[in-house]
Image (spheres, rainbow, N blue to C red):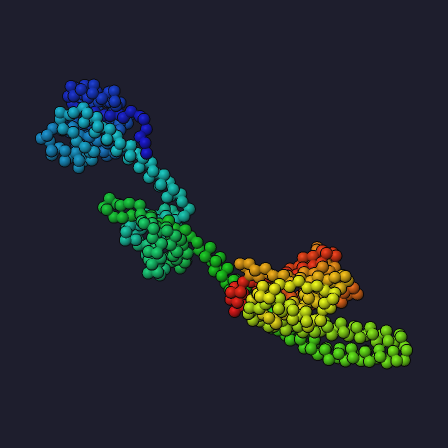
Length: 508
């Protein structure tokens, strides 16, 4: 800290008038000089004034320099003291050091340059002491007013001083220095010492978690920061311990952990119940759908037979009714078959392997028996649309997409159905594109919903499960699917498969 630009107040005491005149003449321009002819006069002057530096001759009648400086030390300790003496007065110097606590001694005759330097050095000491006292006073104010407990400890962990908050925490008042060890209050001291070592940063131990056992049985959870603050007069190392009571926070954390454990337990129970319910529902749905196939097939065959009999009798009304029954039974049978496929796909895990999507699409075209004179297919060349996927599942997905594309392009003079493929770092992209009737682009998020239909059943047949099945298959592959299209401008269904290695790992 820079020294303020103030003149140094110097008090010089000597019983010889010539020495006083010489001192004043030598230093009056540099310092604010005051002189006295005896120790008694000087003490009276100090009662009314302040001196940064006090200089005294040793040999004076009535009161020696050492005796005078001892009195100054006792009453005005912040004044820095210097002694003027001859070479033969070593005993006086020792006495002045012991009694007067002098900063330095100067032998006669003094050298003006040397004495000026000594005075300036003495003032530096005075200034630093004043700064130290001010800082200490500020620290003392903070120490006393702090709402958090603060304790001063020695290197043996014994209390030297407690602020009011610490006295209240430890239920101690006016602790005799060195009488109460901090360790008496610590729970599981060996573990706390290990934590102190782990949290050490130089001469500071920061935010050490510990529990204090307070007289009366109370347990207090704390965070403690211990810092080295210097040494006592006898050389003992002193530390400051700042204590933060976190008992309420710890209790809240414990309660939150208990609530989380209880929530996890309840979620686990509910999840198990839900999975059991889903398994039961799946088994029930499969059983119902499977059991419906046989009577529906019978209804379809019988309605077909009734229609033939009505035709033979020429009963057009009966024939029309049997035809309507036949179509309804066929739609229900298709729905049941789709539900069965949907249920099987949900239960099956994807078995990934390299496959050629173009080759698989050609299989689907042959099996569906698409009229080649009406539809033109655009397919990748052999080996140019390789993906990592489950062959059976992808075939089901392509079958559904192909059937939809054929269905929605049947009103076109020339239907165009394209299978596309693109490979990237994040995986493979397949798409099936057609030039059919398309759909309202604002409803594209509904395309893959179960039983969601964007066209009327009278215009285009279907159960509303096909694309939902495609979505389920892509989720089994850890992939995704989406649709793009517009009214009378065709539609494109995209299938994104993760990269082969990533998909294999996730499936495993």
